[in-house]
Figure (cartoon, helix red, strand yellow):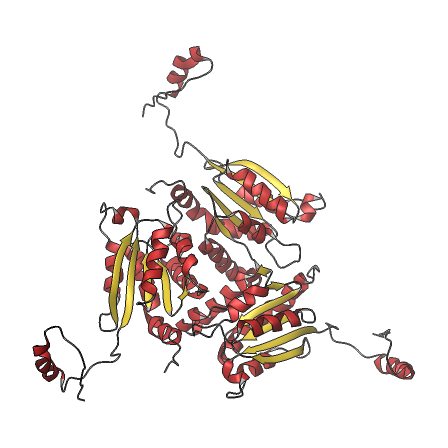
Length: 189
Length: 189
Length: 189
């Protein structure tokens, strides 16, 4: 395969050289990676009292050849902080995954904060995550996570434990690329 | 059983003949069929670019001895067009089934339009449709369909593919008559 | 184990005696029982036309060594009566379970009344109840029950039949104590 790339490099005299470099090079698909924001919601992680193992589990679950982590942050269990971070990231991220704050503790408000910014719900994603979770533990029914879209960005709340994150990502990964293709308004292959 | 049917035929001189035909005829129950509206939501079907195979699959899935299709229409993926059609049909239909517009594409707004007109949600119907769908494909979790009641009318969003419609109707048919009996305020048998 | 209980009995001259009785007595844990309100929602039970078998099934399903029924009432299928009872009980009950009014009959409004008073939804509990119900009967998908929190109180809508109550409680009991520990803001063991 020979690729001719039209670009306007700042340093335009390097253009012929660059073209040479690219010829005969086989690009792996997709050439553009999926931009991701990872948000850990936890009072104790935000204060530094606890290591953010769930955020790390999220990052590890995303194959780097397909996903590019643009943002990764930790916020306390405050609805305003969660909602404003989601809004801020929506412009640059195709996918935002949260971990934490979906349980029954009085401070758990991630679903409420997420619902504030979503324009369309995707209840089937949340249901599938919990239905799979119930195979591992009956306590999965206590996860109150939601999922949906904010413009062209997909937002999914995952549980707050590294194990819950890994199990959830095993459910999500097979459908994520297709979901994001649809959300961009493109026809899936 | 002898049935005397009172009707006012346009061509009234055929009335005695018709009465003769019906005498000694054993009507199967229910004598009153369930009135149904079938709404296909699709830009491409509305423009004529694509054949409405999902609407046809819906119509085929309803046993004609029990269900009578009163309305069948195609509207584009516009929330106002969907909501106003649902409102218009609610007076005459015990059941309205939609197909299409429940996915993640930017134009998919069938659930949002349906939520506008529902007065009570029936989340278990939507959950059961998706849980069954997940047995066939993990992409079923992307269906955002809702179900609920609008007065005495049951409204259910089904997926936008003929296969999704057929699978969904296999889940719905065993409970539909019972559900509509309850919704009419009658005691089930 | 010797327990010294500090209390201020109205009849204070009995205090030394009471202390003697308690010494060497091994209290089973938890020492403080979970306070529960049981609400039956049914026009026919409220009018006395029908016996409240579902409320009785709820009461029987709660192990008395762990749960203490503080309130038990029957209200008709009226959203205002349901919502005001839930609000009234929330101060004193850690858990409120309802039975009835979750179906498709025109008078069934328990989910709508419950949604009015909940501040956070726990959709996974309602999903788990229905998913289990579907193992017993496809009509379980018609249950529209919701679950969630009202301050530090967990509220769960259960179906309106004794069988539905017993099946639902078998799903709930394994997670209830843990859920209520979280909801009190305590760390689970």
